[in-house]
Image 1 (spheres, helix red, strand yellow):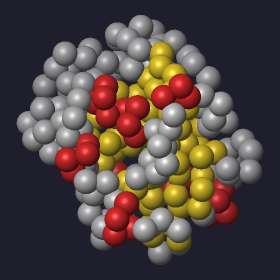
Image 2 (image 1 turned 90 degrees about the vertical axis):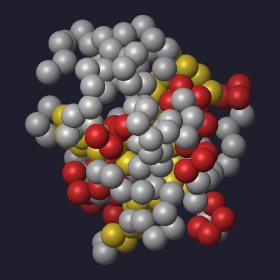
Image 3 (image 1 turned 120 degrees about the vertical axis):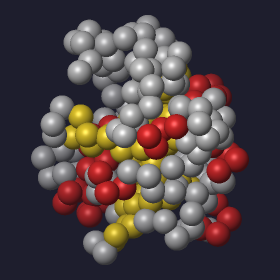
Image 4 (image 1 turned 60 degrees about the vertical axis):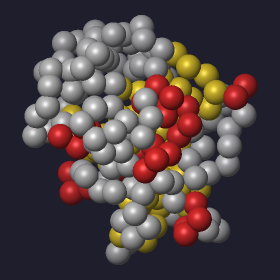
Length: 208
């Protein structure tokens, strides 16, 4: 079992550039607790997004009610709705007033597999992996109500826990998936060999 009192990440751990934060998050555990039970996912794939200098970022054109959480401080969960049907979750980095976050794309379910599977019964496989950001949030039971949750608070319903270190030689990097701008920027990071990692799909459709 994970020692919650010791292994919940700190705000200082996360208050760094998203491009540096993203590979650091690989191997960390995202935990969601509710009346239904607990699901823990070991992160295997993430994408970094900066702010005003990143055309693919939600913050590229400035601060809005939708992206407000992404402007910091670090350590909060930024959840947004996409395509009228899915939620995606991000770990906010940097410092207060400087936008930046890391999209959690995929992971391996290490606790609560039965509950995770019941939340997304149409997902392929047996619930062992959360392949893709929409599947990951579904298995964890995350939605708009979790936007702004403090991941560093031991009492939070959604927490980020330190996991086992991932060897540098197992970390791969490449273009982000499905973005319509800055398509070739290599800010997607993943654990080589993980069954949860997404199939790469180049973007191109204009963002709404």
